[in-house]
Image 1: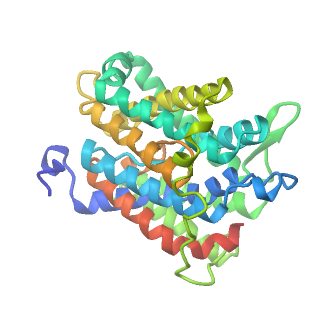
Image 2: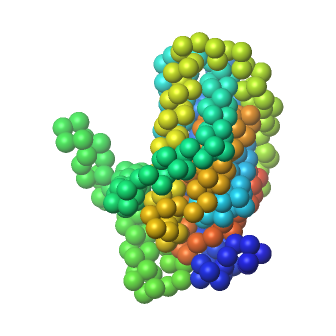
Length: 353
């Protein structure tokens, strides 16, 4: 197995890969809760319940599709890059397609399915690899990495409350005396100290210490149980195939092309940025890019059949790389944690929904 994942060549080991894979999982686990809430339009109370996608089914579909994508990425492309339903793409699915255009969620899933098939075809022909990925200038690839880093930082600062929305200046300082802000600052300080001291798995340890502190002070809900029942997939499974006849319209063509192009460039940017951070680029080119794109596009097809929006390579993989991940073994580890999360994290659902 070490030889298959090129541990010696990459200067890594099982411990670093497992810690890296777990760190990536912890960084992206929020999608298991956010994606069902987004697709079910929970924030729109006036939306008819009979037109909502089943939240529990989406939770299970999200976990299974993400796990499948991660394992495919790890085994086929051998990169430490996770795959899950993309933020932004799920919002477009819910708010623009279902709520705005009035398209049924079943038909929207059919649109995701078709866009995934087109992705697969482009990946098999090598068009995306030769014409897009390897054509991006080295300077732009570095800029993409920096931009993604700034984006993740902004999302984290916003989610923690350190910064807040302001109608006049767009962004302003939040309530710096609130519990979540103080916990975030504590976590950042702990993590930075560990990284400065070059402690192995400093990012992961910082996340763990912060989570424990949050539970102690009541800022993070403690689950009432460890294992929860898995929601059924039956409300969403196969609906993308059943409603394929509904895609033949100009409106659905626009939806499919939007899913296609947004996912197209989202994946390209993330692959390049994370691979650059991990030192996996060679001569300004991404080795096995075609395999990575095939894993990504295949997960879109699988996810749509299960019942979730477009999946894509995840920028949160950079946290796993920072923790030491360098090979596809880390992605496989992330995939197995996502499978476990389908069982274990259901215990947290009642805390957040």
